[in-house]
Amino acid sequence: MISRRNIRVKVMQTLYSMESGALPPDTARGQESLSIKLEQTSRLFHYLLYLISEVARYAETDALKRASKHLPSQEDLNVNIKVSGNTLLWQYYEDPAFQKEVKEGHFESRLDPAIVRRLYLTLTATSEYTDYITEPSRDRNGERAMLAFILNSIILPDERVDEHLTEQFMVWDDDAEMMQTMIVNFLNRPAAWNLGEVISEEKRQFGENLLRTTIEKKEHCLEVIGSKLKNWDPDRIAVLDMVLMRMGLCELLYFETIPAKVTINEYIDLAKDYSTPQSGQFVNGILDGIHKEMETEGRLRKVEYRK
Image (tube, rainbow, N blue to C red; front, side, top):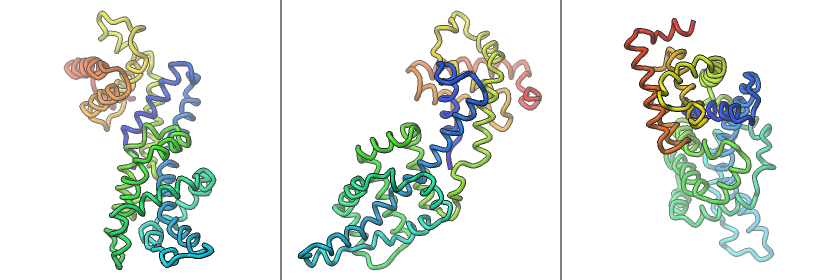
């Protein structure tokens, strides 16, 4: 399932848009923007599964086209279509929740058939594919391995696919690595997944609460953070760094189920990945300083603070 880190990234992006003026500083508009990002992530997951299935199912299209030639060769008449009948593929392809996503997301019209054909031809040229189709039985591990191979070795390394996904999904750059992990996990244990709820209600609530709290407690957070800036001019601090520190402080104060150490480490990593080279150390210094001071003074009682 989608990770809390990815939820934090989407909250961070929403808050940054509000701070930079690209989005009105309004809680309702912020929640709407966050909801769109989460829906895009869920749809992207289903779209990648759809792309895997279309590459595999193209074997039947290829067989039909080659058999329909004016003078088909023996090879044309004997195209192996084992991959198109991959049992794990059809297990999720026929799932009503998946089909609902395919229809509502207009996947068929969004996917260029030329991309599918090129990926299929790349697949059929690999030794892994040859080994797969020459094995007469359908072993579950083999079925799973083939779909994972199509994703990891055929689809994701393709530059034109990367361009296509960037055009189709605004969240692709941020979600690509997570999507790869999620789909491999899904292929390993498809029965444990609900394709109608890729993002759990608990994760949605976490994102909405984090966004709302960071907006509503902005003045208080700026006051607490400002007391730790010493010789720093708050107006000269990177906007993204300030957003991350506000989010981190809100988690420290108001989210009682998340350990302080986890919160601080998460925002250090986000600062390193999304802000300046020095941001990780800077965010760490401020959040860790606030945490230690409040803990020493006995003021870090999250449940009481939340009330």
